[in-house]
Length: 458
Image 1 (tube, rainbow, N blue to C red):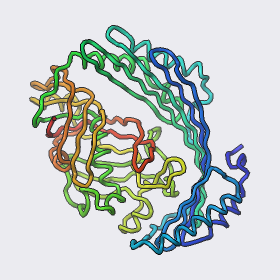
Image 2 (cartoon, rainbow, N blue to C red):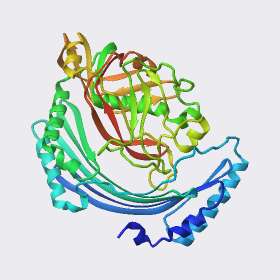
Image 3 (cartoon, helix red, strand yellow):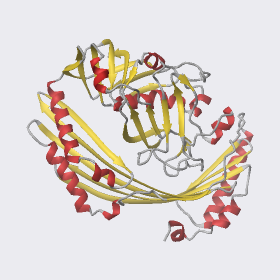
């Protein structure tokens, strides 16, 4: 039985109710999540939760109105639509912006997740075994603590628009995170994660190998030297390169930030923003990726969008409104978490791999620093400034990795580091994670190849 049958909703009546204002849409969502948390080999939490609700959007000329509720009854939805319409009329009287929604094809579709193994078909006992194995392989001398968490979520949604779009969607995500803390005079930690859509993401991963590498990284950081500071040739591994591309480039290419005058890419379309080796892509269509989806939350097909091509800024990522206001093509990047309103978000954002193998890239680098992994950072998209922290680093001497380093941070100007990229490896790796913006968190992927550039380490 489909989730719509369980909700017993009269779709035709809902579509009739949406015949109001300039434009209107509604999303009915239901979701279930399951989590297991293990600390030092002991299960601390096994939990599950369910949520459901409806979000209404109504546009009246240039004003938006929104309404949400956890009550999905047809009568309540009708009241919410009227409430949102009243808000839209008031908003229209107090706005000076002109709202134009880019025209898009009318879609009627039912989307299945396409997973191979449903997480609900795997017992809690079997899931716990994966966590146990991770703990055992991270444990050892100087490892003072481990933590492993497992989570899966299944969501169903119905999107109806006043234009006639009707999309039923099923989405399933699975994720395992692990952390090892090492101590020997000082305290260091390392972490890793793996995720995807179905439970096959866990089955296909080498959890034992991931755990051992996590332990080895934590132990290596104990004996690592402090990273030198100053200007260096650097190689960023696919994870750190992906985080930089996502945070510093992808967010700056979000069209809502362009309209808010909060991006270094304002008025830069068709201009050079990086070297010829820099091609950046946002792609919601990559199979089995964490940021994959067929349609965004406005019913626009997810697609592959080239943001930067050979150093030239080609596009932004858009919602229907930003595409309409800037008179550009839609990209299918309007997404939301739960009952929040859709905003411009990335999907899978990466730097296109180049022609160098990593070994060739390393051998060609006489001296510098190899930076691996990301511990987060911050970006000012308006000023075009960034600061990131690597998990670990290695000194490069005569084309070889020598001494391990720690406490490596890189900072500088977004455009400067992009213009200094002189090589990209042929690797292609996508990390899994969640991106936060506007109080919302959505699943994304980022990565690509390793990149060589120049920047300041601080």
